[in-house]
Amino acid sequence: MAILEVKNIEKGFGSTKVLKDISFDLEKGQALAIIGSSGSGKTTLLRCLNFLETPDAGSITVNGKCLFNAADPSMIREADIRKKRLHFGLVFQSFNLFPQYTALENVTLAKKLLAKEEPDFRQRKKEIYKEIDEEGMELLRKMGLSERAGHYPHQLSGGQQQRVAIARALELKPDIVCFDEPTSALDPELTGEVLKVIRSLAEQKTTMIIVTHEMAFARDVSDKVIFMDEGVIVEQGRPEDVIENPREERTKRFLSSYGNI
Amino acid sequence: MFFTSDEFLTVAAALNTGFIKTLQLFFVTLIGALPLGLIISFGSMSRFTPLRFITKLMVWIIRGTPLILQIIIIYYVPGLMKLFTWGGGETGRFTAVSAAFIINYAFYFSEIYRGGIQGVPVGQQEAGEVLGMTDSQIFFKIKLLQMIKRIVPPMSNEVITLVKDTSLARVIALQEVIWMGESFMKGNQGYAGLIWPLFFTAVYYLAFSGIVTVLLGMLEKKLEYFR
Image 1 (spheres, rainbow over the protein chains, first blue to last red):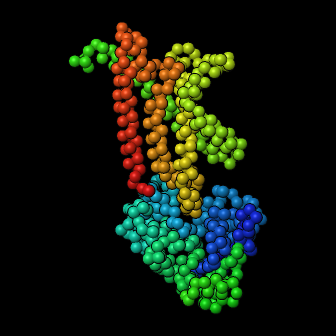
Image 2 (cartoon, helix red, strand yellow):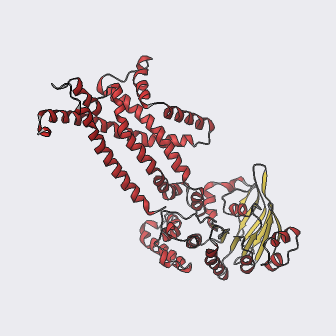
Image 3 (cartoon, one colour):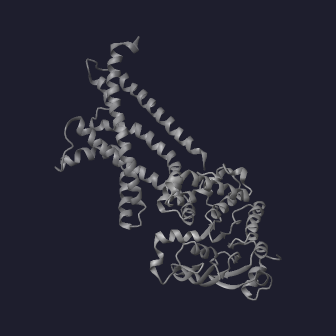
């Protein structure tokens, strides 16, 4: 059974339709790459999945449980949305680290705040915080940042900041990790270290959705590719089909602008 | 030795009394205007258009007219219109002038707060949201400190200006340090025609604004650990 089922999502801002009838699903442990030109609706789609935007129509189901259905207004209650968000993690294009916290604190902050809602928090506070810190350190180690745990974001390079942001998203163990153009704000020489981390996550069978302009990376790392244009899914399928042998004219035209991959 | 003469000691004692009044006005203004300014800033950012419009209009009026005029209006107009009086004597004057200062400074502060609040990137709010934080956690754990860092430098400017603006209370004869200094020109405790006491009030202002500058500078330094 698919871990994620997205059905007939529509989203408009004012009179502009940004997403039109978007449907796809994703199996557990798979990586989905979403490609397409700027303004094609890729980012808006990710934002809908993370409840930063509310779709006008359609439904989102994770693990067989319906998280959102536009036809049912009771699903848009603020308090519920907060919990539903935890099924998804989001890595932003511009990192959005919290500047006043160290790398480790960035990773652990949300989990420590969530731990306060546990019934035995008061008795076990020290123990719980210690566990969370250890998990955070372990994640930073996996990102190759053990030495940087005590650094503040402004003391880190862009690539290091983005790896902290990835660790922060992973700390809450979301079912699906979303990446919104994770290397677009980076200098070219720094994209490699971030892509390497995402690649290793794919090898560990992390369920992921990656919006990216790195075509070679999308082809190598993903199990499935979606090509979007003007708010619709033009083509979806295996990367070797969509990227190497696209059927649709629009996909061909888009990919040719990238030259040989 | 002049600094041990009767003249100096008498004048200094009077100026000290006046300066205590200055300090009272300074702190009362801060205590009133700092929270009131925050409330006004919410008004100026409200999604309810009439409230936002009225707040902006008030900001324009308060910032666009001299504080000295506002003090005069607040002190005299209620009595002239037979609405109420501030009560006679020094207490009445202090109450009226405090009201004028709090209102004036609250509107200035509100604009500084607004800049600080709107200056925190929307990505900070969104990053907190996708991590499952509540709005109050996002405000207190993430945004508040970033706002404070942004508002400390412009706030410092306003606070130093306030140190000196307190002297405008002289216009309704509040017995603050300038009033005291002047009193020795006209005649006070057997001394008349003295000009130096008025000039000497500068020492008080310099000392106090120096202390305020150092303290706010320390706060600014303390927040320099992040960017």
